[in-house]
Length: 157
Image (cartoon, rainbow, N blue to C red; front, top):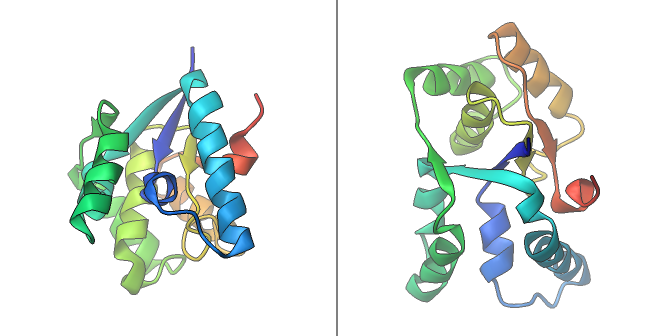
C-alpha cells in the first residue's frame, strides 16, 4: 500500500514557476521537479480546495499551468473537523492568524490521515521550531499529524 501525501500549494508553484535566479530557490525547484518526475508515483497524492484556490491566484497563464499540474489528483473535502482543527492550530499558537490557510492545509492533511504533507512553505508549515507545537495540537485534538517535509526529505523510500 502506498503512503498518502498531501501536496501543499508551494509544490505546484515551484513546478510551474520560471527558473529562479536565486541559487537556493533554483535548487528547490530542481529538487521538486526531480521528486515530481521520479518519486510521486510511489505515493497516493491528495490536494484540497485550499490548494486549488491558491493555485488559481495570480497571473492567469501561471495559474493555468499550476492547475494543469494538479489535474487528476484526488481532492479532499473540507469538513467541520478540518475547520475546527485549523482554528485550534491558530488559537493554540503554532500558526499565526495571518497564515490561516496554512493551518487549514495542516488540518486537512491530519484529519484525512495523510502520512506526509509535502511543502516548501518553511515559514509557517515546514518549520523546525513550529513543527513540535503543530504536532502537539493535532494530537491533543485527536489526530495523528502528518510528517511535514520538503521534496528533498521525501526523495528516498
